[in-house]
Length: 85
Image 1 (cartoon, rainbow, N blue to C red):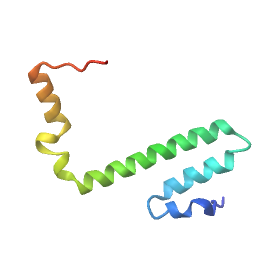
Image 2: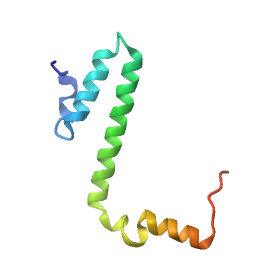
Image 3: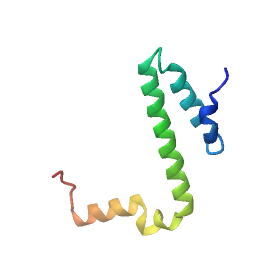
Image 4: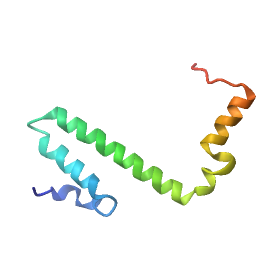
């Protein structure tokens, strides 16, 4: 199955993104629901890639006292609860 060259620029970042974008493009006219699913998956793949990249570049911001575990422990120790406005 040939992939669209419209998304080849994504290949250097993640070949899965090319597959998802191409699948969304192929199903656009005949199956809009599949297109939405593939685009959602593509968005999730982008978010995962960006998060992983930022974590690698800024490890000091997500470890130690800035880790999720440390922040949760601090919240629990202070008895604060998240409220929805």
